[in-house]
Length: 444
Image (cartoon, rainbow, N blue to C red; front, side, top):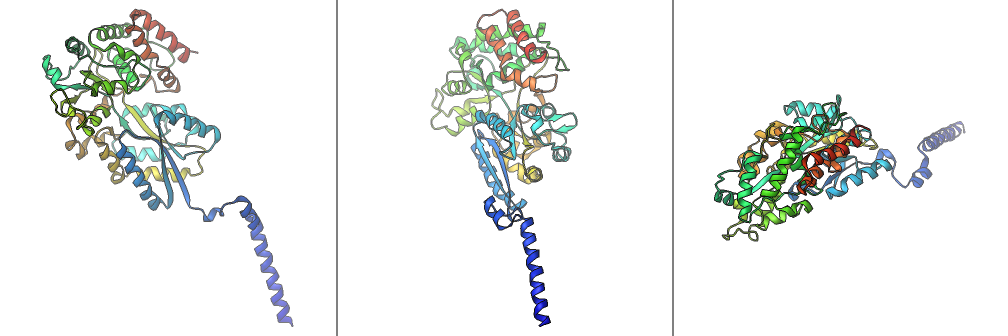
């Protein structure tokens, strides 16, 4: 009888323990009301938001690597790809709602713009940068604030003059002009033959990547090194605008004032332009569509296309290349996993699969990738990007690429300065107008 009472007592204790444990977890009722499995049973998930790459194969590599990363990290890793024009709207909405992708691809100086919403990734970026010999300087301006890395540098995209090799040879140019003045003279000869230079001065990426290097190469700048004082109204800036007026009239297709980022591609591939500054997609499209895109001799057009670095001016030779970086969002519940993924993604054997499929369209974030064997295997026009990032400055130069620099870039103030001059405004007045617009941003 005593034995039976003890067993009943033990049963009651155990039942009470189970009930207490269930109450601590919310119990079955809590699980059912939450409509999800207990946290200890959930598999970790990581979402990464990127743009639709111009190189479709690059996105295919990432999709395949998502499955590999899932196995390596014990998590469900997924990529979402959207049009670049939609990327900032998605970022803003995610920050405002406090939910969304864990990692986001950011272009230009966007990390400075969203700095308060980003996780410090210095513990990821510093060791990777040391192993790769240091990131390119442009990332110091776009992805770093003080001693803190706002985002992990990922890659760089370039913009170059594409030109018709045979047409330039016909006017005595065995190679692409080395200086702006030489391009003006060669362009003048080509335009006289109905083969003008095609350059956008509309509101788009191509217009900016042309205009900023032009300004810098004459010694002009928007602001001083503090980023607090506008210094655009200078002799150097006025001289650059005067050059543009002459270049535009003598060498360029005047319809470029209204072009978007695709108009020059179409005109060049249609055989209407002798040269245009663009991403390497012009050459890539010509090669992929070689059966359809032919030159006047009936040969594949891509075989007559060459690329070159931007011309030099009195103050030097510069590019405005596009930095890409991955940011870990502060609202993410998976910040540790996000950093694990970035470390995995930048392991050499993982990253180089994405790097090589780009064939020079986008390059690595550090000089170590300039020595990769891929450069000896790709077409000559694609090799122009190999060391071009060394010449790249960033918007807001010589100050950091701040949120104000990004605002000035987004409003196309430098582009519009040249566009107004191309339409007849005096160079001094165009510079003075741009100075006033910049002061509204930097000095108020």
